[in-house]
Length: 147
Length: 182
Image (cartoon, rainbow over all chains, first blue to last red; front, side, top):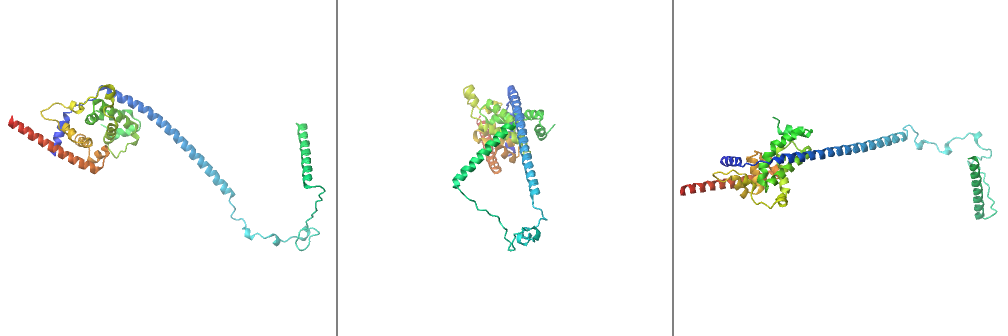
C-alpha cells in the first residue's frame, strides 16, 4: 500500500494545472457582489429582529395590563362570604321606620291604582306618540332658539 | 501564519482580507482537484468561482467541527454535480471531448496512475482517493465532503486501492515483459 501511496503522490505532482489570471478577478467580483447581498441580508435581518422585538414588547405590555386589571378586580380575601349575609327577614327593623299602615304580617302596602282605559290601547299609543312628537318639536325649537 | 480556523473566525467577523487569504490558499489546490471531476478547464473555474462565492455567503453556517477544507470541497463537489455537462462550452464553442486532466499531465516514461484511476473508478471513489492521498484528509472528513456514510467511504476506498494496486502490478509486469522482449 505504501508503494501505491508513493506512486499516487508522485503522479499527482506531474499534474500541472494552473488557473487563468482572470479567475481571481472573477472570484473578487463575485465576492464583492455577495458582500452587497450579505449586507442587505443583515439589514433585513435587523429589521425582522426589530419587528420581533416590537411584537414581544406589545404582547408583554398587554399581558402586564391584563394582569394589573385582574389583580385590581380580584375579590378581597376579607370580604364576607355570601352564606353568612342575613336574609331580609332576619334583619331587625326599627318600629319608627315602618309606615303607619304596615301590618304585622310583613306585607308591604302597595298603593295600586287601576288604569281607566277610556279608549282602545291602540288609540292610547297614537296619543302617546303624538305627545312625544310634540315634545320633540318643542325641544328642537328651544335648541334652535338657544343656538 | 494563521490557521484556517483563525482565518474563518476572522472572516465570520467581517474581515475581507481573511477570506481573501483563504481563497489564495485553496484556489490552486481546489482547481487541481476540480480538473479531475469537471469536463473542461472552464467548467472547473466556474465551479471554483461558485464554490468560493457560496462559501462566503454561507460562512455563518460553517460548523467548526469540520475542517474548512472539508466544507469547501463539499461545496465544490456539490456545485460540480449540479453543473450541466459542458454548459458553457455548448454556448461558446463546440463541445471538446478531450479530458482536461490528460491535458494537464506532464509526459513521463509511464502512464499517470490518476488517469488510470479516472478511467476505472467511479467519480466519488476517485475523489475519495484524491482527498485521502493528495489532500491528506481523514476518512471521516472525506465521507463528509462527499456526503456519504463512513462505511461507504471505507469500503469504496478499500476497493479502489485494490483496483489501483492491481493496475499498478499489471503495468509493471507489462513493462518488464516489453523490456525482456525489447
